[in-house]
Length: 518
Image (cartoon, rainbow, N blue to C red):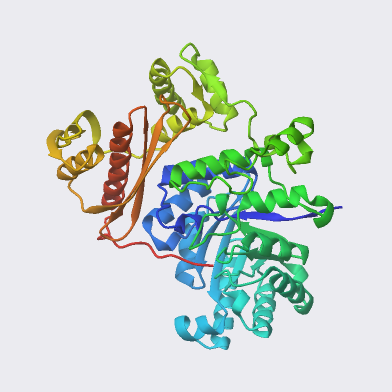
């Protein structure tokens, strides 16, 4: 009988630490619900003590999500653990995840503590967390570079203290698969009580080996893999959930293990995370990239037409990719639209559905054929939004080959209307400089990206912008329209509204939240 591997998803915590990947609470909830549909075993929802926003997000996920366990990360200190429990206490299956570094470089340079002190702190943290809930995970930060004998000593001690999962992270992505797999196997063999806890792994992708290292660890006895959707995360990211899961599924003959993941929800999860973070998936990305199931070479096309297995090792349908992309038109009704949303993995409230359908009908009047990507762009543009202070009610942009681009814009606010005009070196520049004069906030444009959602001159244009606030936090905005200048304005205002909303809500002088790297 195949051994069951737990999948611990940290998209909402480590994944959100990708530069520019910040999510608001509503977006985090939508991702958490999709992760539950994916049937991940554990959702790490955030780092509660790091900020008020993170605390509220973990609390919201804990109170809302059913099926998956919900974890909150905390340093090995009573204050952190107490704060994590406060956020997690209403979860049906709470997990307190506490950590402290065990490598000599971290002990000497960061913690400035002895091995004995860190061992005592780790045991204290586990015992304190166990006073709140049964499921407690301990992570030995930078385990892959720790002295092996000392690492074994720490693992044995925290298991004796009652931990249920021990995580052995490759925090800086330094390990090689043969080395890392052997270390996990040797640790399980060396630690006398290792069978009393699940050994988990959390691999970073600095050398492009996160998935390979995770699979090597599983082959050597690890019972849990920590990963993220699309492999997002600190620096080069984490092991990608879709790669780990589909490797286990596809090579079940070799690995002899299984997961509980509903693989047909993988593509929807990938698309949703892309929508809410603005982090695009490269076209040649394994499993979920646009080219993952594409064949251009004639010999490949001929082979696939004769028998898919000649060049495809898995079915596109297995990850939730529909074969037919053509969907709806202007004569399609509300029921057809709602049915399409369900097939794409979206579950909307009545209010959200009303907004999305209104936008769909407006677009369908202008565009002959609507594809899945068009529908997904509408959802990203209309549904995953926060309360907006500024609304675009009028925009007129003038440009010519030899003229000076100008923009006239009217914004609606709760206090009335703001009207302003400005010029720029191009149409979008004129729009952005005009909006800047109307907004009472300080920020810089950090990134601007345009893409066509589908092919053709009538394709929706989708714009993603990133604004950097004075505290160095980055806010992502998206906008979609048949007019690329309008899409640019909507994306800019979307980011501005996030920045203003969270700075007003946080009210802590703009102090950025702490981050934790495992």
